[in-house]
Length: 596
Image (cartoon, rainbow, N blue to C red; front, side, top):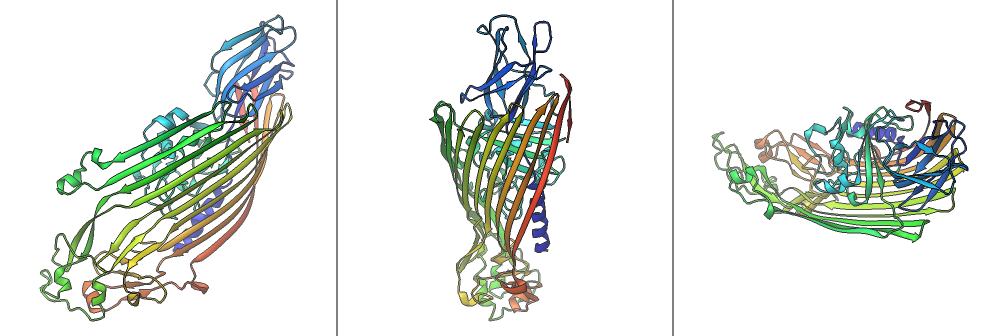
């Protein structure tokens, strides 16, 4: 079964790696004189006021202009033509994927005369049919987020909901570590997660969450969008597309320092804790870090960097079913009315079960109540550089790394304690080169690398190696004796790990001619996916009840051969080539046909 699951999620991952994402913006419109006649040959200059970088285009024979693939930010537009006053439009805010339509009117006069109009372009989208929601920077930063996972804001969009109504805060290499979101009824694995145009999923195609169950880096995200339906041809995927853009440096030094703290001493007492008259579980969370950005060379080269740390102790009250004192001492078990004798070979294993401190159920089992702390540590770093070589060439480079580890207690007694330590490490690298080949021809080429590691090893603290089921292994699992399972793999799933190396190379060409805005491109993805699913790796002893266990009457013993045909190590390799073509045809100023 695990092999089928491994193959299934691997196929979903590879199929989803086709997704492009529009992380830039566009300005378009028409230019006319005071009589409404269209003006060709007008020089239109669009300037990013944050970075000082400008680009010039000419209006065509129909008086239309189009400035493609612009970085996000606050823009100014100038339109100049001999014999007319220069028109200036300010206050144009470009967000990801937006095509701002700005109509300009030139008045007769000297070109040195300037007429400035301040005001945002109409926000109603009239050029694209995609159904999308934008989450802006203010929303990302100011809305309260549990664990500061910015991807949770996708749940604010129409058609998005948490899978099974629950957030996923426990890591598994199979199901991931972030909140699993279903968009438009699709499975969470069918969503695409894109960062600056790069596939950012984890090794099994899940939300790029960590062992801590979070997606850090909220301070590094400028904005993100959630596409839920009617994608253009450059997108692929059966679910939604969650696409984020990281911040960049500007001509001004800017940054932030932050610290967020949660403490159970400031919380109301949990209802179940109050009813049980128990002590409130301990909870401490510290999230801290900084961001900084600015110019290396004014109007040309910029940097942005960030660090975020998470330190957490999350206490919880739990109850295990363990052996009662009556069963341990071979005294009469009330419900059965008889004694269950204990075989000599079984006696050493009774110490692996916690001593009861709760209700005796009278059938040889009793409750063991305990509290866990589950310490968690996570560190996130990001560095980004943007550089403009000339009026026609620019490049940006980004690298981020996220390390996280948690400690989860599952079972143990007087002689041994069994834990699982989720461990994740994600590294994302992306570089994009953009070149203006002519006023109506633009090319964007990118190369990216996604290396994601997720491990869920079993940890044994203490215990006599002579009691282990197999040589050179940890203590295995005992199950089927009417009490909770003990040992490694006690929570199911066994020792697991997955390692993804995803190489992507993409190129996109944008060409405008007449009323057509044509975009086409291709991507080559090379996937190296290695996995281990070590269920029963240390051996599992199965019994058909408590009496059989105490008597040492084993029903079956299962174990996994670590080498040869029984090995659980798998490696998958795949190369995929995908292409698209898209034409946005302006039938008239207020009507655009999107086809691809």
